Length: 222
Length: 294
Image (cartoon, rainbow over the protein chains, first blue to last red):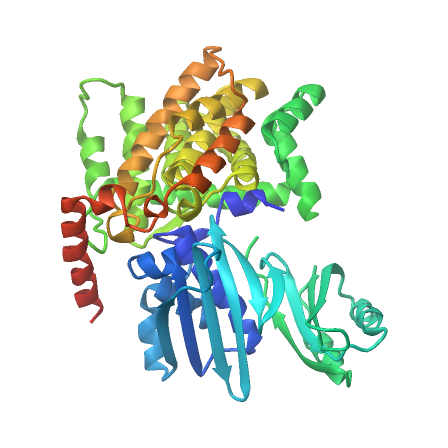
């Protein structure tokens, strides 16, 4: 669903809503996968991101987002220098993600401590984004909600248990999508919620023995 | 939000409301936020838009490449345009101003995108200044512009990489034309005709920035996009109608975008970017950017 405030916005540092602001938002969202700033990041750019990203500051915007800077933050201009200064390792590669991938697609692979995760994101215009894959699982996350991502063993009643837990913690579910790669295999849940889930929610989810890992992806757009 | 302008126009007519009212009501229902909050957010966008116009018309900005900048000030200083009145010239200058700020990595409102960010503030604030229109009417106009942009996003695209410049400055021209037509007292159906008249004029417009940078021709396409919007407003308010409904014009824009060769969709592989001069300037300039980074 398109919001008026997506169209009349975002307020942003130029020059491109798709290549700068959208790229920054994908970085911000990816940050949640490792729960903070990366130690090592590998960024694969596809299509127009690869061909014209440099001139648009796409590289700076993605690294800026990964550092936690928002699209209207002046520090985006110097994000690469800031990351280098902080001793972070990052690399860029131009690639073809797939023949039918969106023209502005990026795969971001992050390491932070023992955590290693990746996502594929698309910048679909006017600063709007879509995450299509996390750790190989197909997802659809657009950053307009706070989103909880979790991988759990495929046990009966897991969805009901999680829904109850969120309700008990006062969090309202907007959407819930479940996917798994095979019957009895791990279940991948993407839960968009109305309010920012607090530490309690994360601790409660992690206390469930059949939840392998869970992360909170921040809301990044209107 | 509405997926068809025709539906919004029908609701507005049936309830005796403006398109900005039905758009704000739809947004309020979608997002479960009071209308006052949405208007406040639009008001903040308006403040940033005005700031960018003011910053840009001073004329001391240079883009990273140095290819654009200073033209808004030139237009502002030309008191005796040979063809046009002062409002028209003022609108063109404001469009250049916002894009010059954008190219200099300044702060702007992407409405609908950064590449097309000059058209809407230029047309709305330019007309408001000339006609003494106040802030509340401008905020309402932004809601109408948002409705039009949302319909374009749903039916076609707002991305140059997906649909060429017709999806960025073209969409911006449609948004500005419709929003200003309402602001100047046009009926919902006149708003629809203004959108169709503006959008039809930009069908097929490619996205071909030199070196892939949002500078040249983007800065100038915003000024000409604003000019197209002004023409559409003038015609729609005079009662001129366009036989193909706005929704269908938008649909065809999306279709053309999907058919458009990838060279013409923000890849710098064709159009002005691939001319001998375009290639030469882009090469010289990208080298310069790398040096300034080092």
